Length: 366
Image: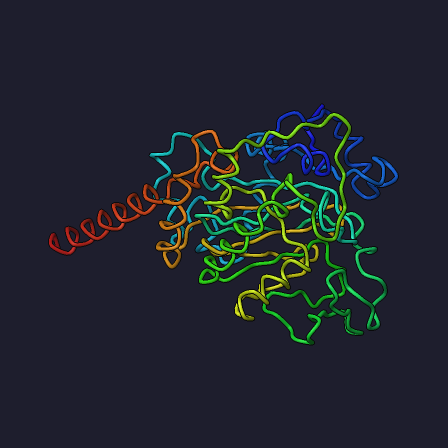
């Protein structure tokens, strides 16, 4: 048996509620991954809850794990073992655990229709990170149903599927990172620029009662799924924390209408990159960029965190904000490297100075 979470129940019970964790056999879960409505029912959207861990991947599938790391783009940055531009490799000896730079697995159901509430945020809610991330989609179980046809047919967010298999946004533009192969997309990412963090945080704080999971009021594009007897774990302190740190608290997920509203309220300044990720495509998101993911199909993805020198300032800024969260906060403990940006930069600087001094000593001896 492995732990699983129904995103619809989680949406109703609270982002940090442990009451929604269930147990299921891997066989049952993967049989339902391609057709969750038939296996689990129309109002269920399951994902694996932390299984398999990196330690289990090392034990159960060491060759697959090694091949996944070797296949990552920009190995100088993304390789968690010896990437010369990956600052995380400098603190290997000082790590208290093996979480930093480990391979994380995301396995969850998906659906083409956006309902504006329960079940949309199966994979990743809107959040920022103090590390850069590379995530590769390896399985999209029912991706062939994620788009209707290929000749000018409609995509889930209003874009169009072109005859050559490419895709475009509703305004006809082609954002960076959009896949143009014949594969139908398995997931849709919304990635925002770092400089838009203030606009996004203000919008989330002002609209938190309807945007947070669970919402205090009715959600726009109303889809209300609250199981009988479900209780929320919100308190006044938690709501205040979410209002102060909405991009770090991990409670919100924006629908297409809400993203459009955010753009209008910012005077058109805030518009995310929309990335439609097909199988075997990698999405790389810099530290400090707010991002969210919606599965259009049952997805299996592998993600690796890294720390590029170019992202050091953003990592330090986000890391300081993360330190305001309670020690046991889910967003703070989910990725151990999140709140250690200062340690990462310090170890990298020390390693660089040590190498420079060793080089100077070698030149002197000559």
